[in-house]
Amino acid sequence: SDYAAAKLFLRAVEPEEMPQGGSNIGSALMLAQRMLLSTDRGAKDQVVVLLSDGEDTTGEVSEAVAALKEAGIQVLAVGIGGADGAPIPRYGPKGDFIDYVKDRDGNTVMTRMDASVLTEIAGETGGVFLHQPQGASMGEVVARIDRMQKAELESRLAVRYDERFQTFALPGLMFLAAGMLLSTSGRRRAA
Image (tube, rainbow, N blue to C red; front, side):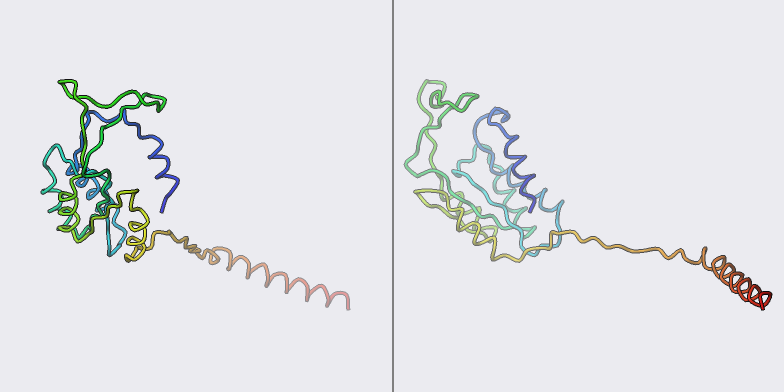
């Protein structure tokens, strides 16, 4: 619900901050699980939205999927890219296109979407795999999340007053009584 924080984090992330190329889906899913469990606010449905081509280079996916399944966290896997493959572009610091990523032999590296991996991840966790060849399936992701039961995220301000009138009640009563005695005795003298 904190859109400003999400935008701040997205603006702070730069491709140069990644220590190495490639993907580590398992590590990303484990991090998402830890974050959801540490900030649990009573939501009955928890979900991780995974935007990926499905190519995993480290092989930690099965452990991460098992942990998510045990925690009851669904994965909505959104497939990025196509089965035919595409070259991976390299961009400069100012966002200008430089070249395509090359391997050690100088060949252009091609990335292909592995729908079977994404389908398996989503299916094992009770989620769903979404893919639209002409664009991202974010409309469907938002619709599915809206149908889930959400926790109350807003905080409520409760004002509780401490009653401290007792300290002033006795002196106040004494002054009131004294004032009444003085006003009645002043009238008797005038008469």
